[in-house]
Length: 396
Image 1: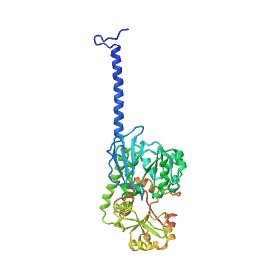
Image 2 (image 1 turned 90 degrees about the vertical axis):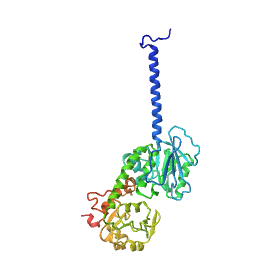
Image 3 (image 1 turned 180 degrees about the vertical axis):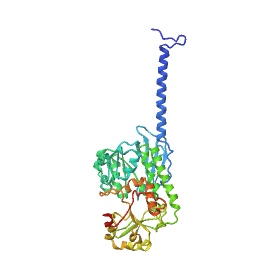
C-alpha cells in the first residue's frame, strides 16, 4: 500500500494525520502550561503579611517556607514548615530543621475550637476528621457535631489521633509541658503544625492568622480577601473612635481566687480598648501578657472607671455581689455600666467571642465603640457583648 499523497491542496490521509497530531500536541502543551501556571499561582509569594508578627512566609524553589519564631510560650527553637505541592518533590538544599507538609491538606485534626472560625471562612472544615474540645463549639453544624473527640492539652487522646490518621494535627500548646504528646505523634510520622495566634499583640495580628492557615489548604487568595475587608472595617472604626471628644475609663476582668489579672499595655486586648477610644488604666504597663493584682490595688486605680467589661461568667449584677460585696465600691458597678462578652455563650462553655471573635475584631471593636461612644454608632446592635442587669430586671 502506497503512502498517501497531497494533491492540489486537498486533504488526504496524511493531512488528516498531521492535523490530529498537531491537535494532540496543542492540547498537551495547553494542559502542561496550565499545570505550571496553577502551581505557580498556588505557591506564589504575593501573600502580604501586614499585622501578624508571629509567623513569616517565604518562597523556596516551588515550595513555601513558613516559620514560627515562638510556636508556644517557652519554646527554645522556631517551628518551620516546608509546604510542597501534593505528589511532587522539591529542592531542600540550604534548609534544615523543617517539617515537610504536602498541600492542600486533605485530613486534619485540630486540638482547639478556635481554628473553626478560620476553617469555616476558608471553606475547609470538611478536612477535619477529629476535634479537641468539641463540646465547646458554639453553634456546631451537623458535620462538626459528629466529629470524633481527640481531647486537648495534657489530655490529648493519642490513640484516637493515630487511629484517625490525619495528614496534619493543628496543635495549641500553652507551655513546654504540653508539647510532649505532640512530640510522640511526630516520632511516628504524624505532622504537627502549631497555631499560636494568641501570642499576637494586636487584634488584627490575631485575625491575620487566617492567612497562615490558608497556606496549608491553598486558599491564600480567599484568606487575603476576607482579611482585607476585616482590616478596612477595623481601621475605619478606629478613625471614627479617635474623633470622640471624651475617652471614658474602662475596668477589665474580675478577681479569680484572690488574684485580678489585667492585660498589660502591649496585650492585644489593651490595644482593642485604646482603638475603641477608651482610657485604660494599665495602657502603659510594660509587657504583652497579664498582670496579677489584688482587689485593693485595682480598686485604688480604677474605682471611678466609667465602664466595666468582661467580668467572667456573670449573667447578672447579682452574680457580682454574691462573689464579693466590695465590687459595689466600683463606680461602674453602682451605675450599672457593666458589659460582658457572653452574648453568644452556651451553657456548655462554648463562647463565640473566643471563636469567630478572633476572626472578627472589627465587630468586637464596633461593639465597644457603640458602648463607649453611642453617639458615633447609635444604631448598632451588640453582637458579642451584652449589658448586665439585676436579676429582677431580667425577669420583667
